[in-house]
Image 1 (cartoon, rainbow, N blue to C red):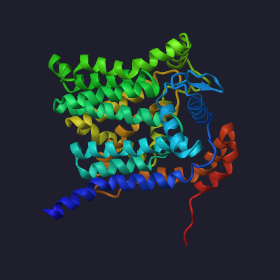
Image 2 (cartoon, rainbow, N blue to C red; image 1 turned 120 degrees about the vertical axis):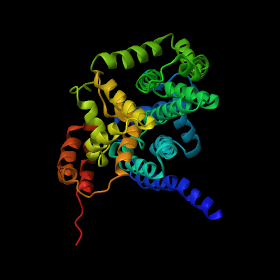
Image 3 (tube, rainbow, N blue to C red; image 1 turned 120 degrees about the horizontal axis):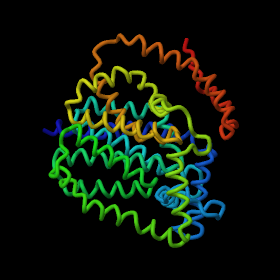
Image 4 (cartoon, one colour; image 1 turned 90 degrees about the vertical axis):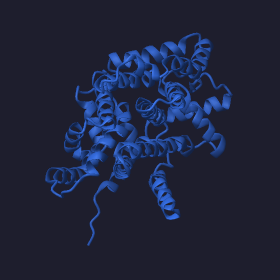
Length: 389
């Protein structure tokens, strides 16, 4: 009996240890200067809010900043207060939320699909290029991804077994997600929930009532409205207009700051961001569709395609926009990788070898094109595959 409990503890803490070790190793490489403008602006905005003691109105260079709601500023201010003002402090809680995202994905998948698939899901996330980068930057996306994923996992749990406690947590996460990046934390999960209820043939008044929608509206309002109303009042509506019109409606309907691209660039962002294991995406998607009778697989498919599809129709397209799809794509990839019984993967191996060979020159060129990355272009030498004798 004691041995069984001991083994369970090992299984529980394994993803924790993996996540911490991976993030410590990556953190060693991000203690220097900020690499992108958004990081510097976010960090400075949090510093100015802490300095002024004004926790309502975000400013950059002491002028109103309407880009994002304040949740990531608050966590940066907490980090500044504990560790001092630095680039590392600004990124600290992004790393924490990255670890938490891996952990909730592991435990959700373990509960519904088993330990082996859960472990592969965690490995896929920790190995993914853009996932690792995203959760080591002073931006609001790490907070949104964790809260977005938590919202949907809790929703799925409620559809399987009604729970008032999980409903409260779900709407709390949705409200906090709205404080992290705005109405997308309500609209996109809401769309995924609706589609899942439709495709799983659970769209009934009873199932909707089990989600406690009235209490949900109240909880989301209690979490979000105090700050949104306060900033609207203190800026005489300037922040509200700037954020909702310029940074939400305009970004969706028109191309902002040159961040456009083809219609299919959104799925390309996901495939590149989830390398190396996204090389198996064709086989993984095919396997998942063959198993779509399983509720958790159907749910992951709907979430993945809904997120990617949503940003395919958006006029402004950036890699971080589609990052909330990573946890669900990881589940799909983990579900496939855990069941591999053959070593014949010639197309995928050829692709990975080719990608490894061209990664250095393409990165070097890309770093020269992007002004903010030019000073560190020589660090692309680290991408050259080592030669072992």
